[in-house]
Length: 400
Ligand SMILES: *[C@@H]1O[C@H](CO)[C@@H](O)[C@H](O)[C@H]1NC(C)=O
Ligand SMILES: *[C@@H]1O[C@H](CO)[C@@H](O)[C@H](O)[C@H]1NC(C)=O
Ligand SMILES: *[C@@H]1O[C@H](CO)[C@@H](O)[C@H](O)[C@H]1NC(C)=O
Ligand SMILES: *[C@@H]1O[C@H](CO)[C@@H](O)[C@H](O)[C@H]1NC(C)=O
Ligand SMILES: *[C@@H]1O[C@H](CO)[C@@H](O)[C@H](O)[C@H]1NC(C)=O
Ligand SMILES: *[C@@H]1O[C@H](CO)[C@@H](O)[C@H](O)[C@H]1NC(C)=O
Ligand SMILES: *[C@@H]1O[C@H](CO)[C@@H](O)[C@H](O)[C@H]1NC(C)=O
Ligand SMILES: *[C@@H]1O[C@H](CO)[C@@H](O)[C@H](O)[C@H]1NC(C)=O
Ligand SMILES: *[C@@H]1O[C@H](CO)[C@@H](O)[C@H](O)[C@H]1NC(C)=O
Image (cartoon, rainbow, N blue to C red; front, side, top):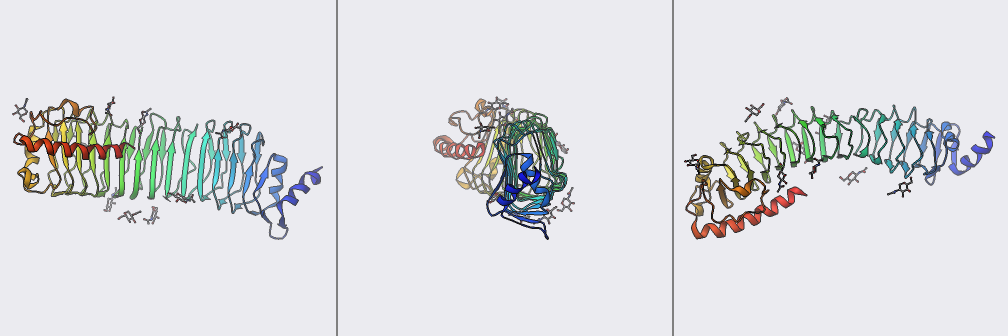
């Protein structure tokens, strides 16, 4: 009986070197049942790729090979409940699981290395055993996981964690991210701790309740924080960034970048309705893009600013006359300032639209009340038209 099951499988395998225990699959090997997959117990390693088919059920154990050089995939299966290997340590290709809706447990306690981990729609998955320390890209989307213990890579290209509605904690030793970290639409109380993160190219963080990155020194390209629930955001060690964008974080009261000196692209802070002071940039000297501030804040200050290459566009529903009076001397020469700000300058308080405006709206014509540009006159109109055009473009980009 056993031979009957094993024989066709072994034929399909192509070649098994009994001495070395290397099983070589010339084409992707597909298993439909545990009985078939048991053949893998004879393989010390697998050269090739493995697929667990959509009719395999309910528990699949591929204990045997410690390495699979190709991909390991489990696709569109609504029967399988547990998937495991006691000794698989490395997947040379991708570990891909998509649309596997009954899967409750993945038990790969020895798995330390994969190329890409791509998990989508595992909406019953609540148990994860892994020891993953090396991966190029990771996507974990729509699972029932409460934590991501078992995934602790120190360096990665892309990491995307989205729609894991029960996830409330993500704490990782990640030291650098060479492409993008995306975190969005997970559990409402998600706390993200990145204690070792030193540099990251891009990050897009949404729907997060706590965020900490105490060692973060460099954001090479962009840091976008839109629609989070945190009350404070501190970047205590960040000295340089590309885009800095905080839009629509309704609970934010304290935004603090004590060491930030350069922003090599745009700085946008808009519609953070509880944020009353934008004063957490004591060392900011240079912004190579535009500065766009919108909201209900009553004070804004950039005491060290030396150079803004783009527009400087500030509007609040509160009276910010005092802040605008400080900024006004930095306006371009054609707006009566010393030119440290090179793009179009605008600073206006008591502007009702500033509360729900993330930068695109506003006539910008009449209401100079409380603002600093009482002498703009006819030229001011033209200036504002240009300005709001620029701002609209900028925000549309950040909201993407
Ligand atoms: C998901 O898998 C089920 C079978 O389990 C299949 O019927 C369905 O078409 C798959 N959906 C997608 C989007 O692949
Ligand atoms: C990782 O993601 C990048 C895109 O950032 C892609 O170019 C690359 O091919 C991916 N690598 C793997 C192993 O999936
Ligand atoms: C990335 O971070 C890891 C872990 O902190 C570190 O070992 C590695 O040297 C870093 N690589 C670069 C290029 O900074
Ligand atoms: C990001 O900046 C850090 C620090 O300057 C640098 O070591 C790293 O190579 C940069 N990474 C990318 C992807 O540019
Ligand atoms: C999550 O954030 C996005 C913005 O990226 C927002 O549109 C969405 O409403 C937020 N969802 C919840 C549940 O807060
Ligand atoms: C902050 O950065 C400095 C070097 O720029 C480093 O020596 C220090 O350890 C960092 N602090 C933290 C908390 O990582
Ligand atoms: C924001 O937090 C920082 C660090 O905890 C603190 O020094 C600063 O006073 C706070 N600012 C406001 C406006 O609360
Ligand atoms: C706005 O504040 C300034 C002082 O900073 C004050 O002189 C001015 O009267 C205020 N404007 C309004 C409309 O309250
Ligand atoms: C601004 O944020 C509030 C929540 O604080 C939200 O209701 C409103 O839709 C946002 N406005 C825009 C234009 O995004």
